[in-house]
Image (cartoon, rainbow, N blue to C red):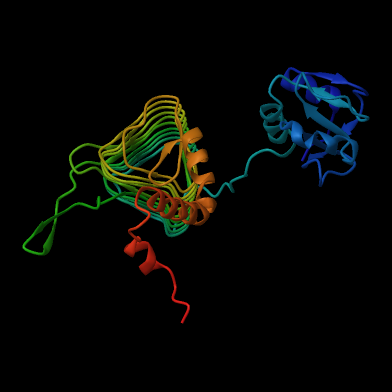
Length: 357
């Protein structure tokens, strides 16, 4: 951890200081938990009142931020500036430089680049290519013919099946599986017969895969995770699906096979997406949504089945009133029946009323 003056931090992120630029910053924290020596950030105006109570030494704010009694770092994008300051002060996770362990099992036909660190009990199969600067943690299995780009990190117990292609600067967190057989079966006379999965998985540059994810290989075509996309924990991507660049898939998302997702999509936690549909670019899918149809570009959808967000909010807000509405409708039907047929009692409505006895 390194300490900096507020003025140095502002210069680093291309912002400017309102207040004392010589304030010493040692760490970062939220507005509520910050203490002396911390820098915090404000991106949502509903938390602006915390500027008056925070104990932070400085706060990163946008150009339209309210006045405060503490030094401010004015930045065009406060949250991005906060990220850059976090990296400067704390850095990313450091990986121990172990070299290649004698306890690793590495095929003679595998090619390992320079400055790679392969830990105990890693298995690297025939014809694998691991480029420079990679870190492979204990217990990982790298199948035959796998290609891993430069500066990638494979955490413990990850399994990468034969033939998968992993890009540069990819992070695969512990216990995830890349290239497993897709969930494909032909049911004949009540018996499920396994379909060979001949496709593979391509993970492009700068992707991060969370823990316990399953990325299935394609049946006929490769499954693709696009450049810069980030997958949370316990995400499943079905065989032959294609996820575009710079998407965010929050934990426990399930995507069925042969689905195409555009670029810069955000998919909330526990959402489920059926197979063989197309989701456009810049789509936001709320948590726990069930997506069963194609989605055009720039849509925000929610619910199960998922519908456009504004319509969904109106629809779901009515659920709590449904019992009262049902009773009102029954009463109106009874009144209408009396007006139209006063001498003929509604036997159905009478049957629904409880007996006095």
